[in-house]
Structure formats: C-alpha cells, structure tokens
Amino acid sequence: MVIHIEKALFSLLFILSYLYGGLAIGMGTQDGSEKWGYIPVRPKAQMFWWYYRSPFRTQDPNNLWPIILWLQGGPGSSGVGFGNFKEIGPLDTFLNPRNSTWLKKADLLFVDNPVGVGYSFVEDETLYVRNDEEAARDLTTLLIAIFNEDESLQKSPLYIMGESYGGKYGVTLALYALKAIQAKQLNLILGGIVLGDTWISPEDYVASWGPLLKDISRLDNNGLKKYNSLVDEIKEQVAYGRFEDAIHILNSLETGLQTDTNNVNFYNFLLDDDSASSTTTTQSQEAPSGDLESLMNGAIRSKLQIIPDNVKWKMQSPPVFKNMRGDFMRPRINEVDELLKKGVDVTIYNGQLDVICATKGTEAWVEKLKWEGLEAFLSIDRTPIYCGDEKVTKGFTKSYKNLHFYWILGAGHMVPEDQPCVAFNMVGNITNSSGPATF
Image (cartoon, rainbow, N blue to C red):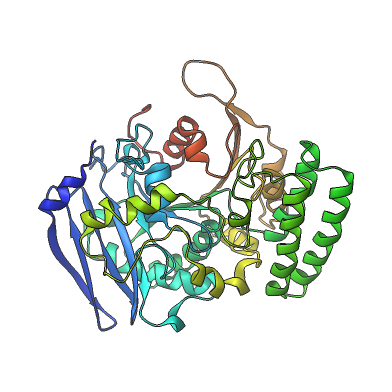
C-alpha cells in the first residue's frame, strides 16, 4: 500500500484522553490507515507515537493480526524516524514505497522513546528519564492510553521489538506491561518480545569485540593486549556497580580500537567508519543519517502538523544519553530470565557482521541464563535459513519452548536494512502472521 504525504491535507483531529492534567492530542489520515500524536506520560513530558494500520489486517478470530511496537536504541535514537523510514516502515527516506515493509505482516507502532527523543519532548530538563525502569513506566502509560481506548487493538497480540539499546527498554517494558495487564490497568495481549542485536549485557559485548576483530584480521596481538587490559578494568567496575566509571574506561577502549583497526565500522566489520568520532558506543548505538534529519524536519513535520515549533527532530538526543549514563552499562539478563520463566516468547536475532552487539557477545549472555530450558536449547542443532528460490544459506535458527534464536548472515547491526528478505520472513514466523508470504 502506498501511503502518500498528501494525506496530511485530509487529516482528522481526534482527542484521545486527559492524562495527568495534560491533553493528549493526535491526528490521523481520513481512511484510518495512520494515527499519530502525543501522550503526556507525566506532567510536562510528552511522548510522540505513530501507528500504521496494515492493509492486510484480518478480523479472523482464529488468526489474530499482530501489532509490532518498535523501540529504537541509542539511548536517544528515534524509532519514529530511523526504524520507520530506514528499516521497516511503509516508506523509505525518499518517500518511496518499501517492498519489504513489515506492515505487510503486522500493524506498526513507532514511538520516540524516552521523552526527549525525536519529536518527544520535556518542558523541564529534570524530567528526562535516568534508567530503563523509568522509561518502561512512561511506555506503559503510553500503551494504556492507546490500547485501552481501542477495542480492535486489544484483540491483537503486541510484539515488543527492540533494536540495539531498545532491547533493554523492551525487556523492562514487557515486565511492567505484564504487571499492568495482571492488575487490569492495561487491556492488551502480549505476544512476545524480540531482541535484535540488543545491548542486553554490555560487559559480554565489550569482551567480545577484541577476539572478534582479531579473528577477522582487523586487530593484531599488540592491539588485543591493550584491549584486554581495558576490558578487565571495565569488568571490575561493572562488578562493583560503578557503571559510569565503566563508561569512562569504555571511551578509552573505543578510541584505541578505532586507532588499532584503522577505524573499523562498529555496525558492520566489513566496512571502514568514515565518521568514527561520532558513531562510538558511548554516544549512540545507531548510525547517523543526515538525509533523514532533513526529511523529519521537512516533509514529515509538515504532514504531522502537531509538532511544536521549538521541537527540532534529531537522530540522537545528547541530553537523553547523558541522563541515562548511569544505566548504560547495567545488564538486563535477569529480566530476560524472568520473562522466559513467565512463559513469554523471547526471540533473539543477530547480524553476523555486527561488532557493537556482536553475535559472540549475544551467545555469551544467553549462556548465562538460569532458565530451566537453557541446556536443552543449547543442545539442539540449528536449521538453515533460505530466502527466495536460490538455496543460498542466509542464516540459521533454532527454538526450544519459548526461546528462539536467529543467526542472520551478511547483516550488520541493522538487520532489516541489510537483509530485508530474511528479516521479512523472520518477522512473519515470529508473529504467526497471515500476511503475504513474500514481498
């Protein structure tokens, strides 16, 4: 389905609800295919959301149509911008239809999370969140405002999908949402949680960088020796809960790796990073995109109509990252464990070429899970993945009970962008979607 910017000319204004003394105002297209707006998740803290209704949505009670909530990383990167226009939304950054859009498999809900990211904003600098729990509370408030007012959405299973740091948001949100559902505060079916190249265990990822880069000849023994010394220091700080101190050492480690590898790209080790000074982990876990910034502050801003004049969309929000520094290096393995024990479907996928959240690091933290099914999961052989008519191996997958893992070949940090065919088929399998089998 082609969604044109011109639809904004026929937008309908609707009022959602009063929350915390603030007015939640949104807009939508005349045909109901899109809705967007602001939710005051706390006084003077406004979170922006954008919902796309799939043209393939069915009302079959035996085949529930899924909804995907996409959470971007950073912390401080915009899902409304990056995830939407660069990865899985209906249009690309040139506003051309994306054949591989996940809208063919599910409804899509993008949010600029936490407040202060993208189009979301705060009226007081003390209102930025400081940790994943505070972000989860705000997101739960947003879900309550959106889902409790729409019975059609309540019948659809929601899949929380986090990319990069968005995975830490995702697992924390899933636990908060479950509590709200059980307390009958949130009318929602939780379909599962999906973790794509996610920063769940910073220590394990940092420990994986050197061995990976050495194995692919981007680092030699001299560089690895310097790296190992700094990793030991980071592990010590994390062990004592001194997460901000760990970040200071991480700065030195990243600078050293960029020098010793001649600026390897942290999102795809086959590439050199031509902007190494601005894409390191300690500033953002999403690559910058200048053309996207122009689009979001131009045509998209004009379409949406409700963005305040003083709010300028940026790919990365430095104030959000600054306020979350104390949580950046904190692991969230226990949260994954808790979700598995509660019977929630947990899917993990990882791009082969990623460095920042390398597969080696993901496998390391998965092996730390205390879930009773882990031993059986690890003992299972993988199944190869193909895409299209050619029998070319595109990846591997395996599942045991409610834990699922996808190894995606030829992809870096942003799997849907690098391997759209594999990602499209994968999301269909995860959500049990009745949408088109191919794009």
